[in-house]
Length: 348
Image (tube, rainbow, N blue to C red):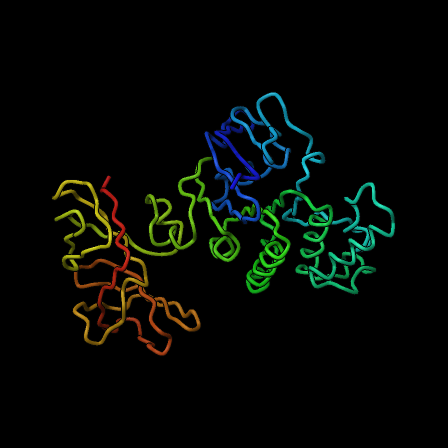
């Protein structure tokens, strides 16, 4: 399948500083892609470059095989057939919902515009809201209007710049799922920028983790969590701790918790000092387990409680217990390890 969007080895600068360096990715038609990373990692700059608001100092961007950006040339944003949903929605307060959605519909009759608007309102579950003004809508409803406006001209690509960050957690999670469903139902191609991994997990078919202007790993949510490519991804995605160990064979690490055999082989020599990643779901509550630990912190999560546990070796680990296993600070608990995916990094 030929990609609809190709970003090839781009560099972007801001005030003389390179904020995106040698970054490449591609997106196939109908895919939803996330750029995930901490503030200042360059993800919004990449989105602005795709939209046409940021010039390139190196590399090129292609949309349906057409070069739309390269050093010295930036095709105007309004000529790219790209829809944009902004963090602050960028809706027009003096216009009603109908007028906001139809704003980008050029070369259409009034009747055609209204047909498209009515269709968009139905898609975003706002039928009957067309005559309302923006201040009469909730934050979630405003975001739906912004999405409808972006979808109305049938763009080749939809870009979403942290569109849910102004909403509360419950609304954010629900709306991110709804937006994904809407885009998938229309066969739309989209790029979402976010710093929230849960939002990225619920939205993206593929997720690119960025730091310091580069993509460190581009993969599914499952693989990012269970097979992080480096320490940054391991630390940024999910929770966990790194414990010291010695590689005794290509698939076995000797640790203070015992010999741990994994599901992958490493090419390092036996005796190599490594750090082993332990996720909370690798450490299981078991009254007959061979490990004992002391509860030093706990965080109630509803169906689960996240415990910080100190092992007899003084190593601290995290573990998720069913919430009816309610242990007090200082209490002793029994554990066992269950590493279906072993992840180790060479000690620096």
